[in-house]
Amino acid sequence: MSLTRAQALEMFQSDDLIGIGMEADALRRRLHPTGVVSYVIDRNINYTNFCTEYCTFCAFYRPLKGPQAKEGYILDFETIYAKIQETVDLGGTGVLMQGGLHPDLKIEWHEALMRGIRERFPKVHLHCYSASEILALCEYSNLSIRDVIWRLRDAGLDSIPGGGAEILDDEVRFKIARLKCRTEDWLAVHRTAHQLGMRTTATMMFGVGETFEHRINHFEHIRQLQEETGGFTAFIPWSFQPHNTALGGRKWEEATAVEYLKLLAISRLYLDNIQNVQASWVTQGLKVLQMGLRFGGNDVGSVMLEENVVKAAGVSNCTTEEELRRIIRDAGFRPAQRDTLYRQYFLN
Image (cartoon, rainbow, N blue to C red):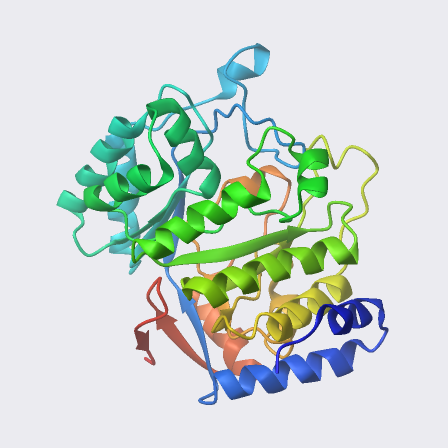
């Protein structure tokens, strides 16, 4: 039986971290009884750091004009192809590609990029473009959400990541990213993708001054859309990294490991209609990641051959496939490499 809003609020207010974790672990065992914990080998490619949204929590973006504009870049296609070739050579099976919002990069640019990648790397899974990027392409190219996703899919796009969700509550979104898409816009992108037969992920960045009720609102939006479409493959929460950001400059207190583990466990219990919940090592480090496997997590995300956005916020956690497999085993599970859509597992 699904967790109610009142039960979720009680858990957020509770000091019984271990009890909450045990409940989440029991649900994880029911959903994943084989004891397998999965990971994927892919690369995060950020094709541009220029952006027009100026989110206060982001240390990665550069404005199109002004002194900082000289630090901006747009990767050329050959550079992107070289990054993907290196990923394939290292055993990678997919690419997660996202970037800032640049009005000169209209739908035709992205279609050409997708086609170029697909021609050269037909087996690489392309997990690209957050809801914000999709919506920007709608604006820049005067197209509907459905048309943008349809055209990108025809050009080679396989699935859409959940980036840009932050907290799905407009009161919070207006405070931390007032130019960014509203909650219903984010949901509309993912609903449309699901209707077109495309799978997506759902994410959450917490620790930006939101209340417990705001967090539960986020869970509820995700749960309702999954009930409607069944299109989410996984839920991925992580904590805000305040360094080098405008928001973090306001004497911000970073979310603790205890807060992270509690939220991870509650998300596992609340989103019982989503098969996979991912524990994060990028923001939390490997020790907390390992604990997260007993707080509802059944996946450790990506070995991540490249990552730039969180790194810009001063976080330098890194790992290897060998280290991730050891951490999974030491936590009492069997490691398995998966594909982006959680369809194939390799228990080598």
